Image (cartoon, rainbow, N blue to C red):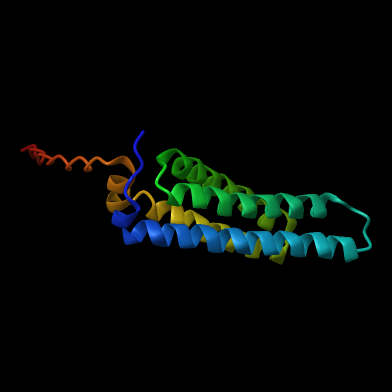
Length: 147
């Protein structure tokens, strides 16, 4: 598999990478914050700390996978896109289910990463990643109205 030319990288791919890195950094910071807050909390429950570690790991994964996808490998792009979608769904349930404002902030950070994934699949980005021009849209024939 040939790698796309970095000099020809579209601006959408650059913005997708920026979104992934910002999202990953925010998730990592919020994950550390959750771990610290759960260590200070007197409830004795480790479930929040475990979720914080998970958010931290996901944030680091966003940054690492985003860096791999930025080099032009479409496989990393699709893996990261699937991860961003799953993380947004997971954090949606966590923020609503636990009623935690920290997880709501993590959800907003994850949505930034999902937006980056959407940018990575725009036609200009798709052409750069795959090396193939997108297929033209087929003309729809209008339906005949019944008398």
